[in-house]
Length: 114
Length: 112
Image (cartoon, rainbow over all chains, first blue to last red; front, side, top):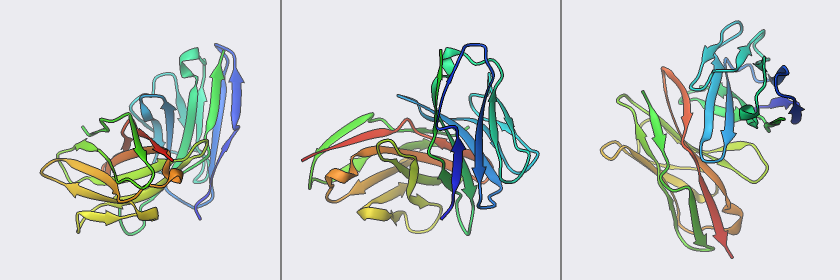
């Protein structure tokens, strides 16, 4: 069973502060993704990575940075957090296997920016 | 560009009734299509996927979906729903060259 672990589970931050959300996968998947979930928007893609050292911008990258220092770890960084970044963030890893890529999700991080 | 539309934000059905959740996609190439489910206070899990072959694909817990290239659709169906099917369902589009994109989701409520 693919395992993706996110930390922290909950985070309260102040406006202007720096926030780092962490994601670890133990399945040796090349692809990793960061999404945010907001009511009415589903999951929106923030950043993704195809392997260690690479990051790509998704559909809503403004205000976010990503870092993939190793195959296992993929972080999302909010340098200057704003209340509009209050959301639930999901990390996923992707396994192509023999067909289309299946995503394996972490349990999510609930971020509140005051 | 690729996009996914789920036109129904909320669907309510009675237990035992049949179900269809709609999904329309926009992509000029060969799509890979998925349905994921999110149970309350949990992460997301794969229900089923289509990438080639038979346009009707079977998933877990009695769910199936039918791919239609002519209609650009990938609707999810179930013959008889159970209260435990209450969840949010997401249609997802990807391909060889693009990261997966999600629809806005449909919240399913099953009345006892």
